[in-house]
Image 1 (cartoon, helix red, strand yellow):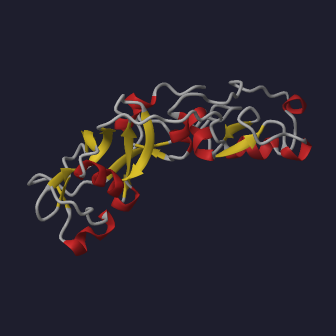
Image 2 (image 1 turned 90 degrees about the vertical axis):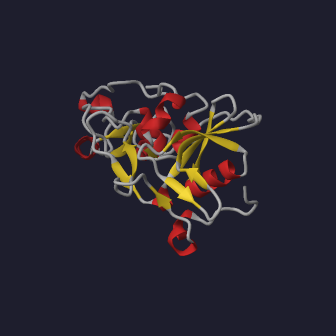
Image 3 (image 1 turned 45 degrees about the vertical axis):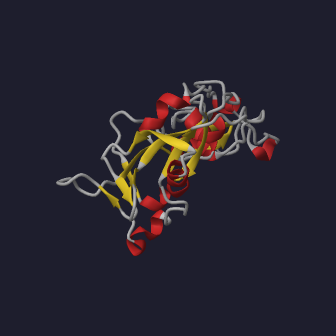
Length: 218
């Protein structure tokens, strides 16, 4: 196994290292579920440079989402093993070896993760929490809304922010729910769990990741 790091995926064509697939198959795209709704939704095809790989601890606890190049380096160096490869069977070749393009990898040795308390509030994390559904009408969410408007003293927190469709966001404007006679479908709470830090920073999740991320909290 070579000691040098594999050539960056973005430069595969220039370095003689390229992803390939079994004979007779088309060059695979990278399929990811956007918006947390896998069923009945057309997959998004991601370019190789945007491909992310889920990194698990030796205990299968989700740790983070790595760039594809970094994930391949860990596998080549023997620091991680492939748990799930690309469903299309893509393989990265060098002059002396080949590595299955991974979707999920697991560290060979356990690493202790320091305690991390509050999950940072991000648009991606909030959309995952609310399953991309408007907190007011239940339609497809496109933006976020402050339940108590910031212009009226509302904080930018998990408990005051919800996913919202454009129509409801426009109608609500800077009004309070009591002034409109509206009610929230679900009371917003701050999510908890080791996977939520990962989801807060990932907008596109491979369907193969879902069994390791646990059930999202509403």
